[in-house]
Amino acid sequence: MTDYTEQNKKAWEYTAYDFWLKEAGRPADLAREIRQDPVGHLRKYASYFEAYEGVRVANICGSCGKKAIPLAVLGAEVTVFDISEDNKRYAMEVAEAADIHIQYEVCDVLEIDRSRYGGYFDIVFMEGGILHYFHDINDFMQIMNLLLKPGGKMICSDFHPLVKINDVLNQGIPKMSYFSTEVYEGEVAHAHFYEEEFRSQIPKCSLRKYTLSEIINSAIDNGFYIKRFDEHPAWTNPELPGEFTLIAKKNS
Image 1 (cartoon, rainbow, N blue to C red):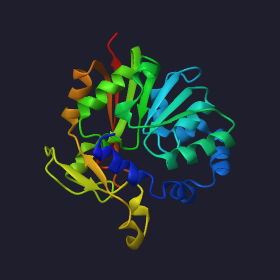
Image 2: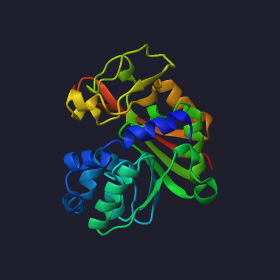
Image 3: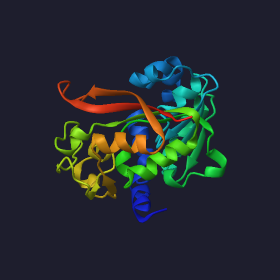
Image 4: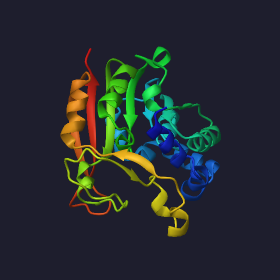
């Protein structure tokens, strides 16, 4: 692992399991809710999947399994890649309670076992804002392409780069030039749920924000062709973009 990956791992393993218990509920309760409405738990992302049964999905930085588990309930063969043992613990408890199987690999995404997973997946899927955890977008896109079968699909949903100049999602993201390439220290995603006294104790992450052109061009430069690009309104202000979803296919 790189130094910045180690730093991010410490942040994501600092009381993360307790946070999921507090925020998402007991694993058995969440499992029951997911089984009752798995498509609903996928939210807007469901429209980007043509099928589920038997489809091999790599859920990148899949965190507590909130999307991996409904995909598995619907019949997909899901492997989560994430850096946090705490996230894995919670996700596996929910999966067991839901009576489904997911594979969960705790690792640096840039160091995924290529001999095992190269060309293995039909879909690589990420959501919830993860690109800023990687300091080189080209290294990241290269791995995404490597994981896919020829003709495989990437579903990349992330925070809209507008957040570089406007904290439209109210996450305490420092403002900077839209074109900044600066690496900076920022809070782990759930830090803002805590009171200031505890919040200040949570280790910081090492982050890098990208522009839209950096993201799109990196996908193209690393063997993808773009099929669709959607912008989604911010949950805090529907007049401004808060997220985007990029759909790309691996060149066959």
